[in-house]
Amino acid sequence: MDTLHAPLGELVDHIIARYHEGLRRDLPPLIAAARKVERVHAGKPAVPVGLTDELEVFWAEIQSHMQKEEQVLFPMLRRGACGPQVYVPARVMESEHDIHVEHLARIRQLTGHLEIPAHACATWTALYRGLQHVEAELMQHIHLENHVLFPRARG
Picture 1 (cartoon, rainbow, N blue to C red):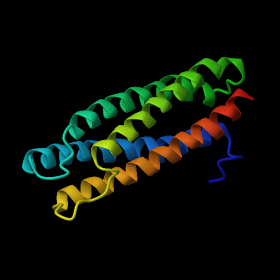
Picture 2 (cartoon, rainbow, N blue to C red; picture 1 turned 90 degrees about the vertical axis):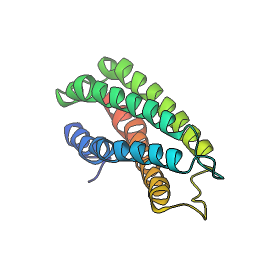
Picture 3 (cartoon, rainbow, N blue to C red; picture 1 turned 90 degrees about the horizontal axis):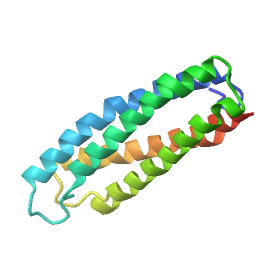
Picture 4 (cartoon, rainbow, N blue to C red; picture 1 turned 180 degrees about the vertical axis):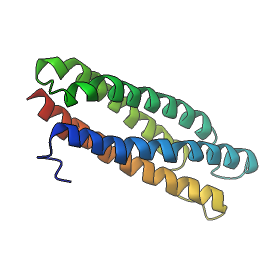
């Protein structure tokens, strides 16, 4: 998709299908994996103590954010709203994106920068690989909204 020139409605549909649905698919199993790793490997070196709690808060905030986009901002954009009409809702979304990036930084801190320990089991390895994927996708998602969708919507 040519994200720079696609109609805003198509760009919104792409964001929902690629990024929102991806988060809905990927994050809940990662929370379950984090819970398992913390429980099974408690006391081992490099266990990501507190990761489950961080991911649960992160997931709740992501869900709230996506709901606001899908129920408020994106329908406005599909109806052709632009300029001052979308400034405040887009600004709120950008501010929440900053919070998402802070969560990613905390996840990296808790996981030793997502470096898979030599003694990691299959679940631990899959957890960190999954978190690496979510981080990469979320950063692309945020970039697309902050630097393409929202500026185009503002006019």
